[in-house]
Length: 101
Image (cartoon, rainbow, N blue to C red):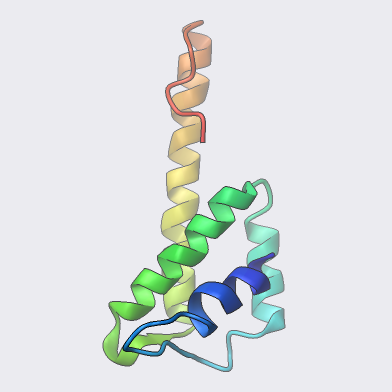
Protein backbone atom coordinates (compact mmCIF):
# COMPACT_ATOMS: atom_id res chain seq x y z
CA UNK A 1 0.00 0.00 0.00
CA UNK A 2 2.86 2.38 0.79
CA UNK A 3 4.40 1.82 -2.61
CA UNK A 4 1.05 2.49 -4.30
CA UNK A 5 0.65 5.82 -2.48
CA UNK A 6 4.30 6.72 -3.06
CA UNK A 7 3.75 6.30 -6.79
CA UNK A 8 0.45 8.19 -6.73
CA UNK A 9 1.43 11.19 -4.61
CA UNK A 10 5.17 11.53 -5.22
CA UNK A 11 6.25 9.89 -8.45
CA UNK A 12 2.99 10.58 -10.25
CA UNK A 13 2.24 13.99 -8.79
CA UNK A 14 1.08 16.46 -11.38
CA UNK A 15 2.03 20.08 -11.25
CA UNK A 16 4.56 22.60 -12.45
CA UNK A 17 7.28 21.11 -10.26
CA UNK A 18 8.16 17.43 -10.46
CA UNK A 19 9.12 15.70 -7.21
CA UNK A 20 12.52 14.01 -7.38
CA UNK A 21 12.46 10.77 -5.37
CA UNK A 22 15.88 9.67 -4.15
CA UNK A 23 16.73 6.14 -5.34
CA UNK A 24 17.49 5.17 -1.74
CA UNK A 25 13.73 5.32 -1.10
CA UNK A 26 13.51 1.72 -2.20
CA UNK A 27 11.58 -1.45 -1.37
CA UNK A 28 13.76 -2.18 1.68
CA UNK A 29 13.07 1.24 3.16
CA UNK A 30 9.35 0.92 2.41
CA UNK A 31 9.30 -2.50 4.13
CA UNK A 32 10.83 -0.86 7.18
CA UNK A 33 8.21 1.90 7.08
CA UNK A 34 5.45 -0.70 6.65
CA UNK A 35 6.50 -2.44 9.85
CA UNK A 36 6.55 0.88 11.71
CA UNK A 37 3.10 1.86 10.46
CA UNK A 38 1.49 -1.36 11.67
CA UNK A 39 -1.93 -0.44 12.99
CA UNK A 40 -2.35 2.58 10.71
CA UNK A 41 -5.61 2.61 8.78
CA UNK A 42 -5.61 2.97 5.00
CA UNK A 43 -6.74 6.55 5.45
CA UNK A 44 -3.85 7.28 7.83
CA UNK A 45 -1.37 5.83 5.33
CA UNK A 46 -2.88 7.94 2.53
CA UNK A 47 -2.57 11.04 4.74
CA UNK A 48 1.06 10.11 5.45
CA UNK A 49 1.81 9.92 1.72
CA UNK A 50 0.10 13.27 1.14
CA UNK A 51 2.23 14.76 3.93
CA UNK A 52 5.33 13.34 2.21
CA UNK A 53 4.21 15.07 -0.98
CA UNK A 54 3.69 18.40 0.80
CA UNK A 55 7.07 18.12 2.51
CA UNK A 56 8.78 17.31 -0.80
CA UNK A 57 7.20 20.34 -2.49
CA UNK A 58 8.38 22.46 0.42
CA UNK A 59 11.94 21.18 0.23
CA UNK A 60 14.82 22.47 -1.85
CA UNK A 61 14.38 21.33 -5.46
CA UNK A 62 11.27 19.30 -4.54
CA UNK A 63 13.51 16.46 -3.40
CA UNK A 64 12.20 13.50 -1.40
CA UNK A 65 14.69 11.27 0.38
CA UNK A 66 14.99 9.05 3.43
CA UNK A 67 15.56 11.93 5.86
CA UNK A 68 12.37 13.69 4.81
CA UNK A 69 10.47 10.39 4.81
CA UNK A 70 11.62 9.66 8.37
CA UNK A 71 10.85 13.12 9.76
CA UNK A 72 7.29 13.13 8.37
CA UNK A 73 6.78 9.54 9.55
CA UNK A 74 7.92 10.47 13.06
CA UNK A 75 5.47 13.38 13.16
CA UNK A 76 2.60 11.14 12.04
CA UNK A 77 3.47 8.42 14.56
CA UNK A 78 3.54 11.05 17.31
CA UNK A 79 0.17 12.40 16.18
CA UNK A 80 -1.34 8.89 16.19
CA UNK A 81 0.03 8.18 19.68
CA UNK A 82 -1.45 11.46 20.96
CA UNK A 83 -4.87 10.60 19.50
CA UNK A 84 -4.74 7.16 21.13
CA UNK A 85 -3.85 8.77 24.45
CA UNK A 86 -6.79 11.19 24.18
CA UNK A 87 -9.14 8.36 23.28
CA UNK A 88 -7.98 6.19 26.17
CA UNK A 89 -8.38 9.12 28.56
CA UNK A 90 -11.89 9.71 27.23
CA UNK A 91 -12.73 6.01 27.57
CA UNK A 92 -11.57 5.95 31.19
CA UNK A 93 -13.89 8.90 31.84
CA UNK A 94 -16.75 6.85 30.35
CA UNK A 95 -17.42 9.53 27.78
CA UNK A 96 -17.56 9.42 23.97
CA UNK A 97 -14.22 9.29 22.14
CA UNK A 98 -12.74 12.68 21.43
CA UNK A 99 -11.14 11.60 18.17
CA UNK A 100 -12.30 8.71 16.00
CA UNK A 101 -9.54 8.74 13.34
